[in-house]
Image (cartoon, rainbow, N blue to C red; front, side):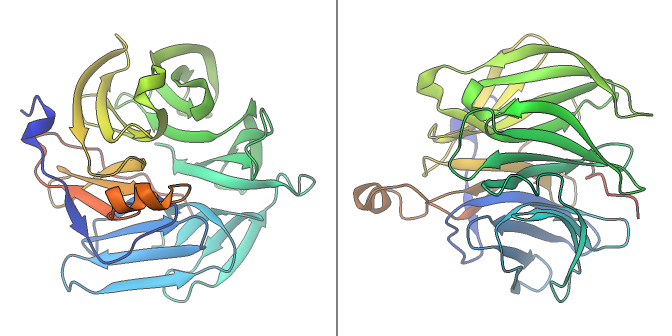
Length: 298
């Protein structure tokens, strides 16, 4: 089992350099990784079988994607929640829970263990408390779960399906909730993990088979592994870029860690120092295993 940052080696995947890389999802059926460039509205795919890269553009900002049980995507876009046909990129509108808030857009989204899609929103100008967290059930009913968020980001559910973890980045914390898998109800919100200013901001996250959280640290040059019960940091994975955004496990054994990164907001000097900013990275054979990705029930 790996115990320090020096044990890990980050390798670039593909040729893309995103402005705001985000939302990686592993496709076990096709042995491929998908990820998005939020600001360009692109969904990228890299096949580990053929080495071929593909991109579909949805014509507006894309905050997150997740697989449906039919192999297509459910996505949070700039203007609401849509189904996206995987091959063509064609969109089918589901709902726009914030159509009255012209400045808001979708951000991180994930599917829970029961097959419901959770999606956070935020102001395009990062206005305080302008966003919320929503849940979409298999009947396409949308319910607000958390209000007053600023930058709604990472989500994860514990392996026993009893805890929900959520990041609102500007709080520099990870909150835990009690979670009812049958209904999607969340309660008993409390702080599980705190980040210092020197750590940067917690962004996207995933959970491993041991129930430990892996968190991308925006402006922190690393992804870190944490125990959400004790709040203790267990290890760090150093990166050659300052703005990792999200991470997931993939590969045949779900032991490879994929990490999206961003280049947006970096100065010319910073870009010169980190020419790989915006790339997708993988840490092969971490010694840890993730959980299979949940899929939206259609």
